[in-house]
Length: 66
Image 1: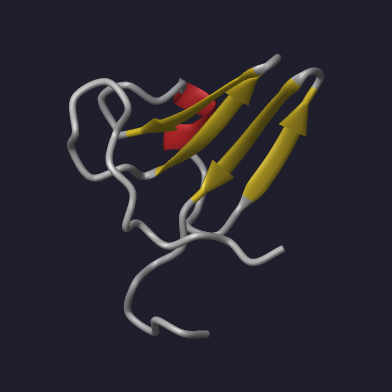
Image 2: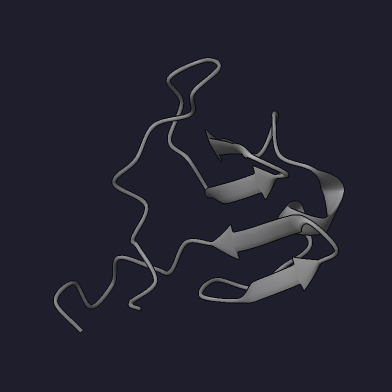
């Protein structure tokens, strides 16, 4: 699966989303203000599984199409 770029908007405030967090059965696109701290600290393109939670930090848009 390819890591999405930052074309998404935050589900809470419509700011540019930095990533997606899946907390149990709830998936959220989130900006830096609404992201869990673990997601904020991740590098672009990084993914983490933590129990029933999954974090995907969106990649940079410098090279779209890669």
